[in-house]
Length: 87
Image 1 (cartoon, rainbow, N blue to C red):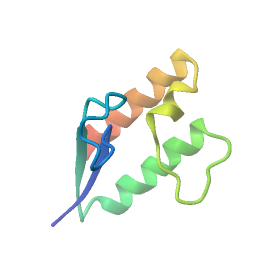
Image 2: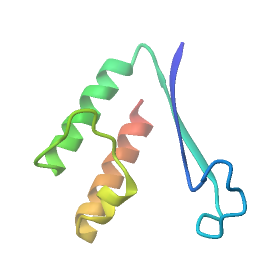
Image 3: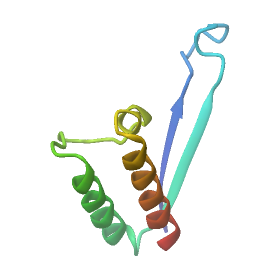
């Protein structure tokens, strides 16, 4: 069995002709149930290493990455991709 996380961006719902959001994007990730706990633990450790305050129910958004300096942005993305490839 796998857990799937899907997320969308850029759609206003019923306002399909909204010029402020002309693009709809859907992305996702699949994690094996047998590897979920380890993946989640390593993800949380990674987030804690970059962000000093982590709110309850934290979600990583592009705006969080863009708020960091370029070296930090590259570091976070690289480590996230490595975590993804590992599991």
